[in-house]
Image (tube, rainbow, N blue to C red):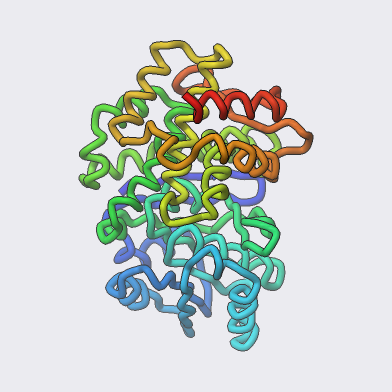
Length: 365
Ligand code: GLY
């Protein structure tokens, strides 16, 4: 088991990472001195029952409740937050009580948001069940829900009190879901750590097959990179924006396909990383050697052909979605570009025409 300490201005907490550590839930919370009388477990319905039973059996609070959440972007909304708040009010939860989330990123965002607003904040433990949430959304405190105006437009920064990352939860996930989380691990290595990138490149198969030592190591390293970023910029004023590598493109690709199952979030991010790599080369920021290393890695993953999904007719739509990104404050689009593997720049030099030309060069050739 590995433990990572996270220190932000608003809260210090730990991330425990290991195989089958849900069964050590009691020992961990005792060690971390997290006390509560009442608990509400928000369970993502996709999590196999065996894990829910195991967690439930470890909770020794005076009263424990379960809220089953049918996790989807559509259900990540105020109605579900309201139902959760209703359950907490009805049962007289105080700020000293706790929400424990067992689920993927969507469930974690919703549970974290409900925790942050109930009586201005109650305790929150996150037990992320997907690779994506283990390496990314469970740490850093971004919480949120969607509305008809867009994704995550309502939310808060609210750090958890503890994260328990149990790699045994990953075993039941489909391969596609693993690739989805892997996209964020790759992203973290490209932002900050070439050594990790080379490790990923050398051991890709063992990692994707979830071999215990490999997966635990890369989850830990990935979280360690994110830790460094959020510790210096919890509220995304500057450097935290670098975690957006591949996401300006990726979000636009997802949106342009109307969030269809043809391209899920992590896959869109991998294509986004491909586009960001090409853009960085075009802007003469990234040298040939590093460019080829990244492209060869993406080709091992089979993510090199954006034309499978888009053609020149889609360019306008894609650019409009990029302009709508909530991280833009002017008519220029914010891109994270690569200087080399392990170092990025926050780049807002590109106006929409240049972006359109770049997309043209990607999709018409
Ligand atoms: N997923 C990017 C961030 O937490 O800032």
